[in-house]
Length: 477
Image 1 (cartoon, rainbow, N blue to C red):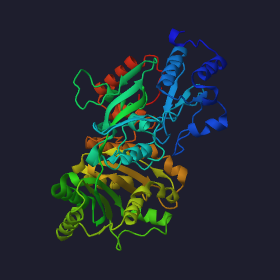
Image 2: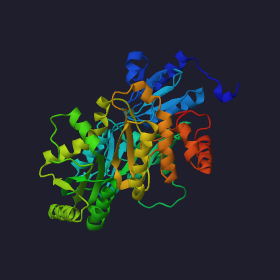
Image 3: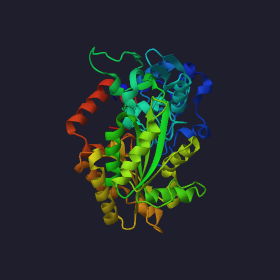
Image 4: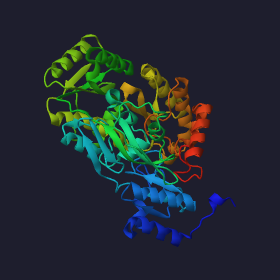
C-alpha cells in the first residue's frame, strides 16, 4: 500500500485530534446536525461525511489541512452551501470531512484611502456589501443568493451576477488573497497593491478553482464610490435581436453608466405572475421579450433625463415596443423581483433541465434561435425559458417540461438535451459553465469542450498543489 494512503489514526482518534484543534463543539458528527451540510439547493446531490468541522480562523484551517493531509483524509471546503453544481457536497463514502468556513466571518480592515476591504471567507456577500455601504462605498458583486452565499465561495467559483457588465466577475474584484494549501502551509497574499509584477499571479490560480488547489480564508477586495443616482427601466421588445440592438444603443449613448442588462422571455414573466399573483406587471401590454436595464452615476442629477432620451430613441427607431422607468425605490424593487424570482417560479411548472452557458454577445440571438428549435426537435412540447445576463453573453438556458408530461421521463432526457445545447455552444466557441462552476455536474463534460493542453496543465497544477488529493477530490477534474 502506498504510504500516502496509510491512515495513522483510527476514526475515533482522528476525531479527537480534530476536537483538539477547533474545540469539541465545532466537530459535528450527529447525522441530524450534519444533514444541512450534505445536500445542496436543487436537491440533486446528497453526500455523507465523517464529520463537519468548523474552524474559527486561518490558523485552525491550516492545522486541519495539515492533519488531514498527513492522515489521508479528504476535505470538502464549504461556504454558504448555495452552489449549483455539487462542488461543495461530499461523496457517498462517509469518509470525507466537510470543512465549513462560516465561523471565519470578520471584516479585518477597511482602507478608504486604498479603496479596499479585507474580509474573511465565511462572511456573507450581503455582509460585505453592507460593510462597504456603511463607509459610503460600493462592493458591486451581486447575486440572488447574496444573503447566504459567502465571499469564499464566490471566489472559489469566480461568481458572476448582475453587475458583471460594469465591474467584472469576482476575480476582477480581488486584489489579494490568503490561502491554506493542502499540506497546511499558509500562502499570505493579502496585498493591497494594484500593481505587482513580481512573478506569477498566484491569486488567480485559486480563484475559480472550487477548493481543489487551496482553501481561500481571506481576501482583499476592491471598493468603489457609491453611486449617487440609479435609474431602472423595464423594456418590452419583439425579439432577442432587438434586445441586442438596445444593448448596443445603450452602450453607445451612455457608456460606463450601464450597470445591468438582463433579458427574459414572456413565458418567464408568465411563470412569475402565476407563482406571485399579487405582483404588479411592469408593463401593461404583452411582449415577446423583456429587458431589465439599470444605470448608475456618480452625479446626483441628469441620469433620469439620459435614460428617458435613450428609451425615446429606442422607441422611435423601432428597437423597443414599450418601456417603464421606476419612479420610486418600491417600483425599482418590483422590477427586480420579476428577474430575481424567475428561477424559483419555474418549479411549480414542473421539472426543469438547466444550462449555464455563455456565447459571444453578438451571437446570443442566433444561439437562442437555434437552441429553441433544437429543444423542439429533441423534446417536442418542452418549454424553453432562457434568461440572464445579455450584457456579458451568459444565458441560463432552462427548459421546463411539456405540459402534462411525466417528470421523471422528462428528466431522463437531461444528458441528451445537454449534449444538443452544448453542441450549439461549442459551435460558437462558447462555455458550458459561465458562472456556476464545474463541480460534479460538468466534470465529465470538460474533456469534450476544454482544450486538451489546458486540461493537461490543470491536472499538472492539481498534482503540484495537492499531490495526495486531499482537497475536494472528484470535483472539476
